[in-house]
Length: 336
Ligand code: NAD
Ligand code: UFG
Image (cartoon, rainbow, N blue to C red; front, side, top):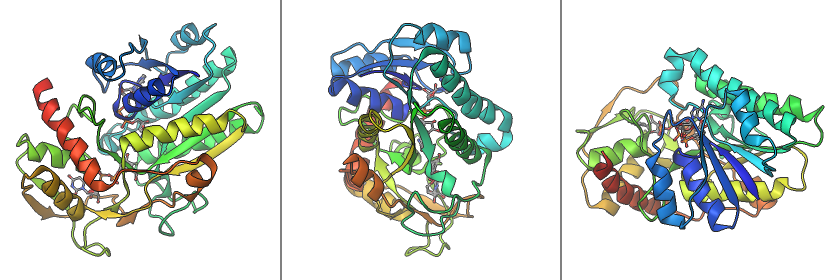
């Protein structure tokens, strides 16, 4: 399949591009590089032996999207491009709605204009808010996302739902990611935040290399086994493979389809810290501070639907996630 990968230079997109190439597909990356680096393209070539075509562009630019899609015969779009910093979404909500919602609408409009019928969208477990049941299935009540970022993801799911009604030929998928971590086993690509990381795993990894002095654990008084937050960490390569499975499914399934991509296993903040220490052999100093506003105690997936419909399941455990993150983080220090 020939697939336009918006946001393909980013963390999840770059790992998905690798898996697409390895399965014989033809990804074309479209990215503004607002949160990624062009050098990832060379590293993709080092991993796959193939130079993935790259187009510098913004998903909010309809003319640019047309010029890319026109006559190019794409079989589908995997739409990763978006902004994802939860805290920033609170201080700059319009930017988040513009890029995440406006950008998604612009991509869908360009698809309609150019006869591209398949789209896979990066949604988030954030749509569950504080989940009503654990593990949380796709059928659970959609919660109230705690921030503009989460709301922007929910809004795009609603756009897809409404669009699927009149445009019956469209094949639309939304993947609700849980907590993507880890890196490609080569250690050549991984999560590379420009600023101080918001998320737990990259923060731990930067404490391990001593770029950051210590980890702040946001609360140890939750109603969880050790009092710290519990999440469903999923290896980014497992996540990437989930996209391939979903694209295969969509080929003969019009309509909107929604899947959780998680392992189904909850891991606490302190359990992740211990796993990282064990795997890397490096001590991670930490200090417990107040809860972070908007955080829920626990969120982990019921991944049954993806297992049954897509034949997909996560393979890698938390130790492997830490091992690959650590290999990548040591390489990333040299890229600085
Ligand atoms: P990322 O920031 O590494 O990748 C996103 C890519 O999109 C970047 O390369 C960035 O340059 C590009 N981009 C941003 N705005 C753009 C625009 N206007 N036009 C073109 N390109 C643009 O993030 P990621 O972790 O790879 O996330 C990919 C998608 O998955 C995002 O939509 C994100 O919201 C979603 N998601 C991520 C997580 C997570 O924890 N990483 C969880 C749930 C959902
Ligand atoms: N945490 C810390 N210290 C840190 C960072 C995080 O203790 O420095 C804790 C949090 O309080 C939480 C857990 O680690 O209990 C995980 O936090 P992350 O920020 O890594 O991840 P979140 O679950 O808050 O959010 C992530 C993505 C969102 C996505 C959501 C879906 O960042 O984009 O998963 O569940 F929407």
